[in-house]
Length: 260
Image (cartoon, rainbow, N blue to C red):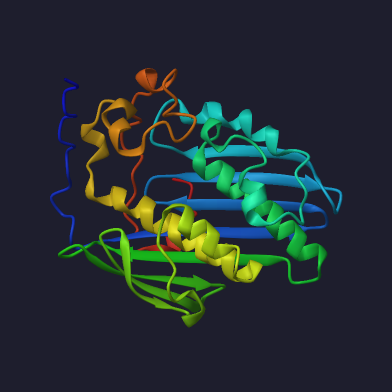
């Protein structure tokens, strides 16, 4: 019989805080800089393109939870050659996402989508800000702002939506193949924002855990499976914890991109 995994250490202050995540996308000429920061991670991607395809994709690791995470910068180059105008779902499958750092890969996909947006004349900058308050009795009221303006608000209980705005997302499942199929039926800008929001809600579940009490990623493996570069079965046993890498932005959203 396979032994049950040990219980994960939890935070004593969970229930009174808020997980925050921000993504900013900036373009100059045919170069796009994308940056993502939240409680657990801080990454950047530099993308150079020819107006049609990605020519060069470079990743930067600023703050990460496991010693193996910086090794995901090299696999990110497999995104070179991806077409800017591809649907988001196609960008996500341009290379094996399980071999990538989830967050660097997501950021590269957003940089490609932003490059296409700029080529179409739709503006050179975009910023997403997500706030997911700690769950109380399993419920959170999460919000998404785009360029500082409120865009979406979801009430999430467990792994299901109780209410959703904007109304165009009514009936959307929160996860699984049904979520991705739903996004195929909405316009691309709404699909991108919804995907960013959904990603943050699931990553935000990590706020309940005290990661500095975990020796390495193997303690968390039963939660996420072989989902990314670090959690690959060939790598996870050596993925030691980087102590002190978690930040708390509950009252300091303006500091998300600080490099301290």
